[in-house]
Amino acid sequence: MQWVDALVQGILLGGMYAQYALGMALMFGVMRIVNVSHGDLVILLSLIGISLASSFGLGPFAVMAALVPLALAFGWILQRAVLNRVVGEDPLPSLIATFGLSLALQNLMLQIWSANSRSLPGGGLESRSIEIGGIYIGLLPVIVLLVAAGLTLGLDLMLKRMRFGRALRAASADVEAAAMTGVNPKSVYAMATAIAVGILGFAAVFQSLRSTVAPADGGAQLIYAFEAVIIGGMGSVWGAFAGSMVLGVAQAVGFRIDPGFGVLSGHIVFLLVLALRPQGLFGRA
Amino acid sequence: MTEVLSTHGLVAGYGDFQALYDVDVEVHEGEAVALIGANGAGKSTFLRAVMGLLPVAPDMVHFDGAPVGGTPTDRMVQKGVAIVPEGRRLFTGMSVSDNLRVAIDQSSRFERKGCWTLSRLYQLFPILEEKARTPVESLSGGQQQMVSIGRALLCQPRLLLCDEISLGLAPRVVREIYAALPEVRAQGTSVVLVEQDVGLAKSASDRLYCMLEGRVTLSGRSEEITREQIGEAYFGGGHAVG
Ligand SMILES: Nc1ncnc2c1ncn2[C@@H]1O[C@H](COP(=O)(O)OP(=O)(O)OP(=O)(O)O)[C@@H](O)[C@H]1O
Ligand SMILES: [Mg+2]
Image (cartoon, rainbow over all chains, first blue to last red; front, side, top):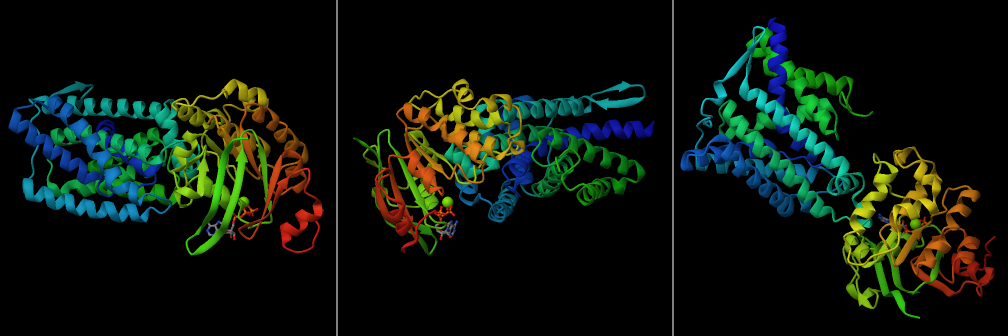
């Protein structure tokens, strides 16, 4: 029973990781942009959300309604002002630029919010749960998982069926050829990064409802997102979703073996996948 | 006849390497112009410079009488220039119809309208309809070339630039592809054909330019130019072309 419980809790945890990983799948998997500030953006948005909640007395869903557009705008500006200048065949310039941004964001957050951990009051939402056959399932993690699945579905449909999605896939396959077909790669990329960071608006609210956030926490989010994308396989959003589940389950099962082994066991699964199936579990060879 | 495209003292290169020297080329409305020359002569560089893929000064390229040198590539497409690039450059990982749809998505937003539709293209190249859902990487070379041409046509071009569309294809497939040209031209579209096959270039064009080491060494009406003239312009010596 405790292993079934670990599996269930792992999948629910995977829902949280999927919300970090989707944006990463779009930026890293599709555009080949390495955004080192990915995790710091989650934390920044979380802290902004917490401040909004306490200053204006907003509930978590009102905070979400404010954060998502803000996150979209952040992403758009990030691509226009920084990443479009460094994007290209070579991923190194974008890596260096976002590494600098990551450090700058962390310092900025320390200045504004101090190093303390904070969280978003959920009005009791965070502690509600239902019991099914002896397993307690938290309401909030279920909502997180459903939202993650909904976002994945939406993103997948957008990439496959919509004009913007086709233009983005074309630009990712061959930027020059996309331009030769009338696509403006810079505006397509700006839109894609806006969406990638926009999703972090959801992640930020759920992250700060589920646990606490502090300015230095971004690194862990970055690593989890990165691991989920690699485990799932680059370039597929359902792959990133599934990779998040695998990572969540690995951590939950590891945690049952020994509480100190949880996060480490996720890293081990990631390294195993990288060694044995570098294209990812669901990626094409 | 009105000029669609003209270049004036066009120079372009890659970093310190200069690949084009004072290239003057004109293409008139409805005309097919061939551009021939040995490997490395600068033919593809010329097309890239026209498409805004290499930095050039505005006055060096005129389209419809307006200076357009250095205009971003997607804007050139919007103005009415499309290219079938060297090496086909299809969007891998996407189906035939998705490759074509990228062009339709964009051109349907242009102010300028054209006559090419997916069904019209499928009439021109029926095999593409059959393969519509196939990923482009599993097509034969000839079929890939048809997708690349189709993608350019669906940009509704007034000027179509073709970079060695016969390269690496069986003679039967080359004929099939060249058989599509009259229909393209019937829409009033001007064409620039870069070709290695001199005979093909001559027969498919009204006028031709020959390039050698980044310079135009010969130009004239295709039917009037002799093999000997081409041989000389091609190699810069007295060789004849077989
Ligand atoms: N990306 C590049 N970087 C540096 N030099 C280049 C590049 N592309 C082409 N060149 C050089 O520019 C010159 C012209 O090349 P270009 O590709 O235009 O020739 P071409 O006439 O199209 O030849 P081919 O028939 O082989 O396609 C050549 O000397 C080539 O080596
Ligand atoms: Mg060439």
